[in-house]
Image 1 (cartoon, rainbow, N blue to C red):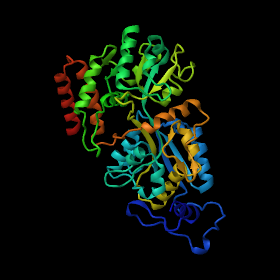
Image 2: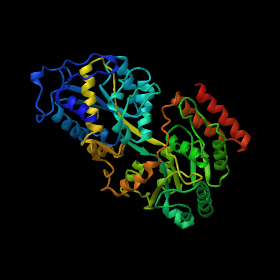
Image 3: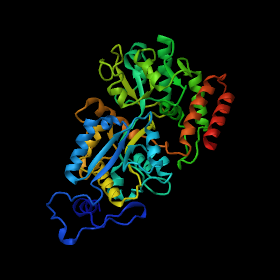
Image 4: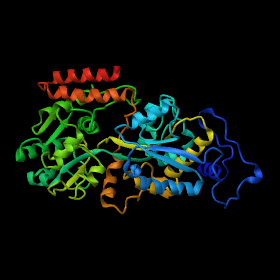
Length: 451
């Protein structure tokens, strides 16, 4: 089926179906169809150029890198791509303004929390479920695949790359305090018991804050959520992503254990970025806001990848769990198509998606992101070795099978994030009793569900 689709789209564009019930683009006359060995067909009339707006996802925010990718696409398809580079500071405002003005781009690159649960859910995007055949579904990571589909079965994103958020530890400090006995450096895993033993050993040796539950805002909140949920197996939402479940007794147990632990502080004066800065500078011995970007270049300085400012080794770790098997929070990024009512442009945008996400060219598109392929193979091209030449990236792939449920598409996500860090502030400012923690959790979980 995949080869049939590729043949139709690449060679003659005959009977290309537009999404959302639009009429098919006009087909060329039979005697104008190119031979099988000819170059790819020209784009349909009116679709010789499409627009892409991309958030800064690795080097997909770098003009020179993206131009090389889009130039190659244009050379193969005849479809030019006009790119605009967004920032997270004002990108959402620009997109929403464009939607209101009916000037949205053809394509946008970001994650399901925007493409699926926001713009898709509000009716602005094309259902691209026709781009996923059975082979695609078997090759794409299950969590990434599920996140791209809305509850009604429509797909508003095609995934390209993903990553898993994790922890970072100061390995030199762990060795000095004798806490290295509590981690498995090869698998990057540890149990809940080993985590608390390590924190205590570090506190006994160094004193001060070993790790901080930061909560002045939502920056880096994926780390605090993963820490709390993994410690005893609590959940953040239900499986259907229709309700928040922080009032799970296992989450309350985790929050109390963190509150009671020497060396763990609930800090209402910092966010994730501040935590990372303290970690770099050796003030904290672990960071809960960590991922491959920090591991590759933790301080944007010259100390080298995987090193603190004073040269200590940083080891990335999965979050601790009772059995040592974590469910990591993830990032997923790919492409969606805004419904501008032009079937030819929609078809051209679909060609772009398949070119970047499911072809021999996917390797280049993935490497540009500095993240990991969302699938195991693309049209026969094995993607498992994309980062074989990069020691740090290759080692980090050990975390990818631990990617957990992508619940960031749950209803009232923005409100829930605000309620989460406000809850952490209230827990940290309480007397630490189970009753006080339970009351705070119930209050803010209720706000998330009723917001």
